[in-house]
Length: 234
Image: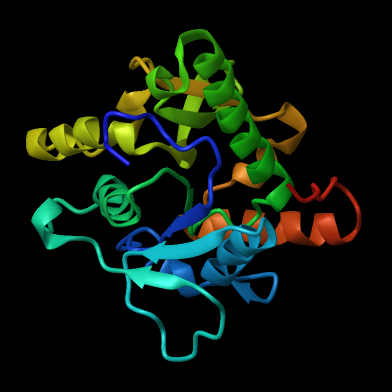
């Protein structure tokens, strides 16, 4: 499939980015346990629950790994010194040669229900655009989850998004220009926001430090008590 196309209509891969340096956490986030499971195991489990092929980017396969997953190391050619999520996404899209849903390994509370809704929104958007302009000319490149903070400001969640291969030229240019933040994608042509339901924003908690870990553990215990809906499958 050429990069000029926005995406396949059906998403078959789930990419989990797990190559961060975890400076704020002080240890490898992917191996930190939340509710008795390592964060990487939790997020890859969500991908598997959806029936998608699991791809982990940013590390070699751990010796003790028992799940079904392909492990990829970020391409040095894409900018090893630069690093960051943008290089991980470039690596995945170039290797897979098709679109994928991308998740950060530091979102241990995410459920298959929420990710499935995001994927459906992307696939249905491609179909709707194709019906108007022809499938090969659909403009949607990325469908990115959006949350709203306490001040009412919208925030894109690049680590909860579907990326089509058509976004690759934009990502490569970001690397060349030394721009790390994927937040800058919001507002670009072909990048569409998908609003996370307010009652489910707790699922998008990023665990980057000790405070985030404590909050995640509290939410896991609350979910076990039935304080929140757990979300369903795709």
